Length: 197
Image (tube, rainbow, N blue to C red; front, side):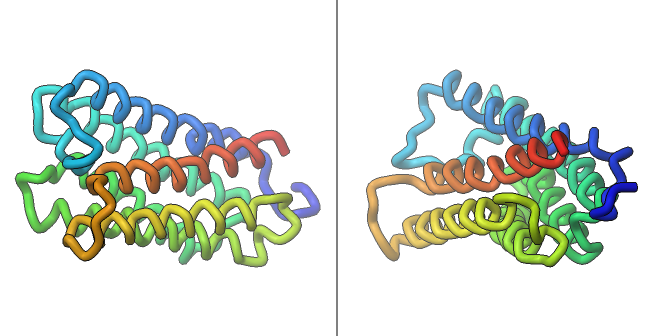
């Protein structure tokens, strides 16, 4: 056992924080590339979940949800995340997987699970980043808080755009994608930092 109280036995679980978002975002990009009808000015990302290649989008979300569970278990085992924060990150991460199961044809469940992920997950990142367990862990705190705040800001603008409160000329999918990238960078960075320690 190290001085920090971390159990290095579970450090390998950090790999899932790295590969999960890369695979999920990669699948979304591939799905967009094979879908010429998709428009950043008109569509939401969820529109990719209800067409002939929807297995790419939905599969990516399910993969990310599963790897997120293993990653957060790793954070807990390394004594970097408290139980409440771990539960918040796991529940909101599983909500992403449920977005892939309950597609746009299954409202209101689809919207509920999407909002849980897009709002609760970045809040979980902020709480994780500000706990004393991350104190002295390099740039974990500022990186986590910054990525989560940028992600939340983008999804709020996207929601306002979707409800025609503001007009930017971009569809909800653009804002969802930016937030997904922002909060996807967090486990990649965090996983890399603690895998190397």
